[in-house]
Image 1: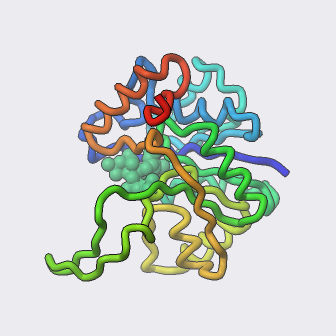
Image 2 (image 1 turned 180 degrees about the horizontal axis):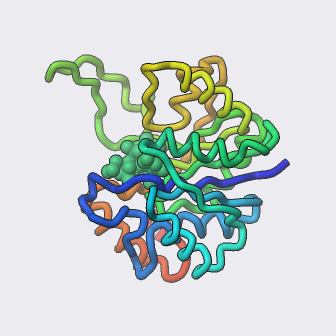
Length: 242
Ligand SMILES: Nc1ccn([C@@H]2O[C@H](COP(=O)(O)OP(=O)(O)OP(=O)(O)O)[C@@H](O)[C@H]2O)c(=O)n1
Ligand SMILES: C[C@](O)(CO)[C@H](O)COP(=O)(O)O
């Protein structure tokens, strides 16, 4: 049974406000995209890496792969207009994979995913068809409607999802088949697609890591630069263990 990691780099980084897609910006002297690919390329449990790149930027991603010698990368394909469309591009590129292939979908915008997080995902995929990575929320989180608090779920029942989000590929295919038949379909992540369209499939949540931040806003670049400085050539040490 094979394990394929997909690095989703199809976005343009609108919120960070840079003319260049944020995954091509450098932190610690290396493009953000290189860290995300490197984490999976270097993991012993991963057989193949597929990169889904923003339209018009495939040559830059291909150059990063060859400059860093990432030997598990099979292809760099073009993404879509939304994250979900980029996931569909990955599923199309992987159409020949048998249904039990393990699929790890990771945001290119999360450069510091650790080998331990990937280990936890692979272990959970032995017993579950769908696996998410979550961290506790330090803030109180509320639902707001028309400027008023509509619901306050207990904080200890909540977590923030990170990536990778992991699936037996056949399950994700089935979820997307149903989603694409729904004219009202929108999604901000892939576990949400399984949750909505295959509600009987349990999604196992494993522990994430605060270092696995998503570079979304300009301030995140400052934090990422700091973490990259702690890291040297590898991933940053856990500040909580220092
Ligand atoms: N059409 C898209 C949009 C997003 N992504 C990827 O999904 C991840 C999470 O998305 P996000 O942080 O929103 O990235 P952007 O879409 O680039 O940012 P923004 O929403 O600010 O434009 C990123 O690695 C991004 O490249 C993708 O593969 N294809
Ligand atoms: C998948 C994700 O990173 C989980 O937190 C998040 O939903 C991506 O959202 P974005 O708006 O595409 O950054």
